[in-house]
Amino acid sequence: MAGSLNVPHKISLPDTVRAGSVMRIRGSVPENASRFHVNLLLSEGQDSDAALHFNPRMDEAVVVLNSKASGKWGREERGMGLPFQRGQPFDLLLIATEDGFKAVVEDTIYYHFRHRLPMGNVRLLEVAGDVQLQSVTMV
Image (tube, rainbow, N blue to C red; front, side):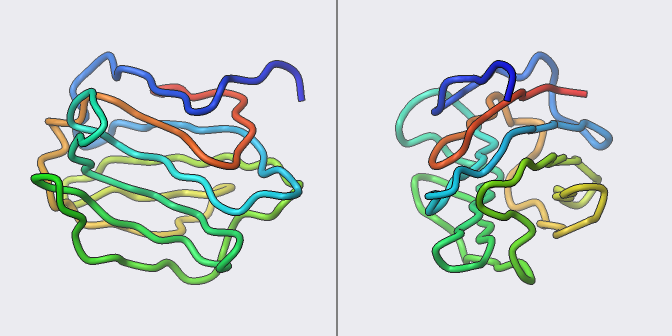
Protein backbone atom coordinates (compact mmCIF):
# COMPACT_ATOMS: atom_id res chain seq x y z
CA MET A 1 0.00 0.00 0.00
CA ALA A 2 1.51 3.32 -1.02
CA GLY A 3 2.01 5.65 1.91
CA SER A 4 0.66 4.92 5.30
CA LEU A 5 -0.20 7.07 8.30
CA ASN A 6 1.10 6.39 11.78
CA VAL A 7 -1.37 4.82 14.19
CA PRO A 8 -2.72 6.06 16.51
CA HIS A 9 -3.67 8.92 14.21
CA LYS A 10 -5.60 11.94 15.42
CA ILE A 11 -6.76 14.91 13.36
CA SER A 12 -8.52 18.10 14.32
CA LEU A 13 -11.66 18.54 12.28
CA PRO A 14 -11.58 21.83 10.37
CA ASP A 15 -15.28 22.62 10.69
CA THR A 16 -18.08 21.96 13.08
CA VAL A 17 -19.58 18.54 12.43
CA ARG A 18 -23.16 18.98 11.25
CA ALA A 19 -25.73 17.04 9.27
CA GLY A 20 -24.11 16.22 5.96
CA SER A 21 -20.53 16.15 7.28
CA VAL A 22 -18.62 13.13 5.97
CA MET A 23 -15.44 11.69 7.42
CA ARG A 24 -13.63 9.10 5.29
CA ILE A 25 -11.20 6.54 6.65
CA ARG A 26 -9.31 4.35 4.18
CA GLY A 27 -6.91 1.62 5.14
CA SER A 28 -6.51 -2.11 5.50
CA VAL A 29 -6.81 -4.66 8.24
CA PRO A 30 -3.54 -6.52 8.96
CA GLU A 31 -3.58 -10.34 8.81
CA ASN A 32 -2.98 -10.60 12.55
CA ALA A 33 -5.42 -7.84 13.57
CA SER A 34 -7.45 -8.21 16.73
CA ARG A 35 -9.38 -4.89 16.81
CA PHE A 36 -9.20 -1.21 15.98
CA HIS A 37 -11.36 1.84 16.63
CA VAL A 38 -12.42 5.17 15.22
CA ASN A 39 -13.44 7.80 17.77
CA LEU A 40 -15.16 11.14 17.24
CA LEU A 41 -13.86 13.06 20.24
CA LEU A 42 -15.10 16.23 21.91
CA SER A 43 -11.68 17.32 23.16
CA GLU A 44 -7.97 16.51 23.32
CA GLY A 45 -6.75 14.32 26.16
CA GLN A 46 -6.86 10.80 27.52
CA ASP A 47 -10.35 11.00 29.05
CA SER A 48 -12.08 12.91 26.27
CA ASP A 49 -15.76 12.26 25.76
CA ALA A 50 -16.62 10.50 22.50
CA ALA A 51 -19.74 11.19 20.43
CA LEU A 52 -18.97 7.95 18.57
CA HIS A 53 -16.72 4.97 19.30
CA PHE A 54 -16.70 2.64 16.27
CA ASN A 55 -14.83 -0.54 17.22
CA PRO A 56 -14.44 -3.43 14.74
CA ARG A 57 -13.35 -6.52 16.65
CA MET A 58 -11.97 -9.19 14.36
CA ASP A 59 -11.34 -11.40 17.40
CA GLU A 60 -15.09 -11.39 18.18
CA ALA A 61 -16.41 -10.97 14.58
CA VAL A 62 -18.49 -7.92 15.58
CA VAL A 63 -18.47 -4.12 15.48
CA VAL A 64 -19.22 -2.45 18.81
CA LEU A 65 -20.50 1.14 18.82
CA ASN A 66 -20.75 3.36 21.86
CA SER A 67 -20.29 6.87 23.24
CA LYS A 68 -18.53 8.23 26.30
CA ALA A 69 -20.01 11.10 28.31
CA SER A 70 -18.56 12.61 31.49
CA GLY A 71 -15.87 9.93 31.40
CA LYS A 72 -18.35 7.03 31.42
CA TRP A 73 -19.10 4.62 28.55
CA GLY A 74 -22.73 4.32 27.52
CA ARG A 75 -24.66 1.23 26.48
CA GLU A 76 -22.88 -0.79 23.80
CA GLU A 77 -24.63 -1.32 20.50
CA ARG A 78 -23.53 -4.10 18.15
CA GLY A 79 -23.78 -4.16 14.40
CA MET A 80 -24.82 -7.19 12.37
CA GLY A 81 -21.80 -9.15 11.21
CA LEU A 82 -18.32 -7.84 10.55
CA PRO A 83 -17.82 -5.86 7.31
CA PHE A 84 -14.02 -5.93 7.70
CA GLN A 85 -11.69 -8.82 6.86
CA ARG A 86 -8.13 -9.45 7.89
CA GLY A 87 -5.73 -8.78 5.02
CA GLN A 88 -8.27 -6.66 3.13
CA PRO A 89 -8.51 -2.92 2.40
CA PHE A 90 -11.56 -0.95 3.50
CA ASP A 91 -13.28 2.36 2.85
CA LEU A 92 -15.31 3.63 5.83
CA LEU A 93 -17.52 6.72 5.73
CA LEU A 94 -18.96 8.25 8.88
CA ILE A 95 -21.82 10.50 7.80
CA ALA A 96 -23.43 12.88 10.27
CA THR A 97 -27.22 13.05 9.99
CA GLU A 98 -29.79 15.03 11.97
CA ASP A 99 -30.33 12.11 14.34
CA GLY A 100 -27.09 10.13 14.30
CA PHE A 101 -23.98 8.91 12.52
CA LYS A 102 -24.27 6.51 9.59
CA ALA A 103 -21.37 4.12 9.20
CA VAL A 104 -21.01 3.19 5.52
CA VAL A 105 -18.56 0.44 4.59
CA GLU A 106 -17.80 -0.16 0.90
CA ASP A 107 -20.94 1.73 -0.24
CA THR A 108 -23.27 -0.19 2.10
CA ILE A 109 -24.92 1.41 5.12
CA TYR A 110 -23.69 -0.76 7.95
CA TYR A 111 -25.16 0.94 11.02
CA HIS A 112 -26.96 4.11 12.13
CA PHE A 113 -25.81 5.17 15.61
CA ARG A 114 -28.22 7.67 17.20
CA HIS A 115 -26.72 10.84 18.69
CA ARG A 116 -26.12 10.77 22.44
CA LEU A 117 -23.93 13.89 22.49
CA PRO A 118 -24.20 17.01 20.30
CA MET A 119 -22.43 16.37 17.00
CA GLY A 120 -21.50 20.05 16.85
CA ASN A 121 -19.17 19.49 19.82
CA VAL A 122 -16.99 16.95 17.96
CA ARG A 123 -13.49 18.38 17.49
CA LEU A 124 -11.21 15.43 16.67
CA LEU A 125 -11.18 12.16 14.80
CA GLU A 126 -8.92 9.42 16.14
CA VAL A 127 -8.01 6.05 14.61
CA ALA A 128 -6.05 3.54 16.68
CA GLY A 129 -5.46 -0.16 17.12
CA ASP A 130 -4.65 -2.93 14.65
CA VAL A 131 -5.06 -1.06 11.37
CA GLN A 132 -2.91 0.16 8.49
CA LEU A 133 -4.17 3.63 7.71
CA GLN A 134 -3.99 5.09 4.21
CA SER A 135 -5.98 8.32 4.61
CA VAL A 136 -8.34 10.18 6.92
CA THR A 137 -10.23 13.07 5.34
CA MET A 138 -13.23 15.30 5.88
CA VAL A 139 -15.05 15.08 2.55
